[in-house]
Amino acid sequence: MNNSKNFRPLSSFESWVIDKKGTEQPFTGEYCNTNSPGHYHCKRCDSPLYRSQDKFPSHCGWPSFDDEISGSVKRIPDPDGRRTEIVCNSCGGHLGHIFEGEGFTSKNLRHCVNSISLVFKASESQPTSIALFASGCFWGTEFHFAKVPGVLATRVGFAGGHIENPSYKQVCAGSTGHLECCEVTYNPTQVSYEHLCKLFFETHDFSQTNGQGPDIGPQYLSALFLSSTDERRVAEKVIETLKEKGFKVATQIRPNAHFWPAEDYHQKYYFHEAKTPYCHIYRKIF
Image (cartoon, rainbow, N blue to C red):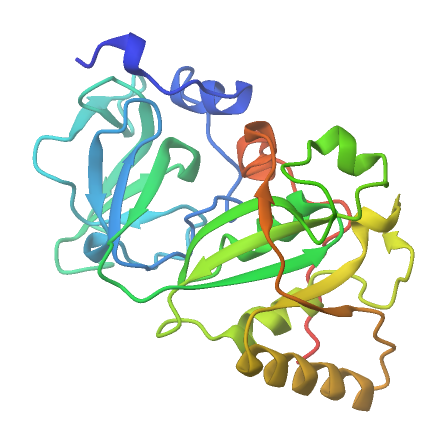
């Protein structure tokens, strides 16, 4: 078993799932719908557990795999004898349960795994692009983008201000000029900037001029930071479509700006705390 001193620190919710065998709510996990090339590692000890090619859509609400990396997963019968638990073979961290005979794939096996027990590491050979979105509290912005198939990584932070490496406390004071943002790294062969841009508008109130929902202040304004003429063309096209549909659009169009990552406890906040956004509710528009 791996030495515990090398274990990744866990949030209270991560510990509840991994150490105390809890279960995250269905369809809330970061990796429920992902399909990017790479490997899924143990959140606690970083041991590789699953390959992306063994992941399949089961529509059950949790990531599903029909095979594991050899020797990486241990099976433990539940005390009631009805289910079989799966844990990381290196550190014993709880992953979920395994089921047989459901007929989802030819292997007839489903590892039903909590997203919170995993860390995804993308293959380095795939093409990547980076986009920057500001739509109020960055926790909610990230919640929706992180679950899009083809999105490889997300980080929350700040952009557009006039001081370097600002803290969350400084930005919240409203005097640095920064907006709370989500940096989205994605594979453009799997998901387009237009798709991400439309999701941006479908998950916040882009008509609000003084913040987002109950979060009032300049750091919560709606904005697109554009890094190319192609992104500008797409953004302007999407905004024109919204106006044709009768919507008022207060979203600012800004040139690309330096992104400063926020403190660690802000990253993947809703996934770690098993909560859902209070002001980023999806509504289909396009």
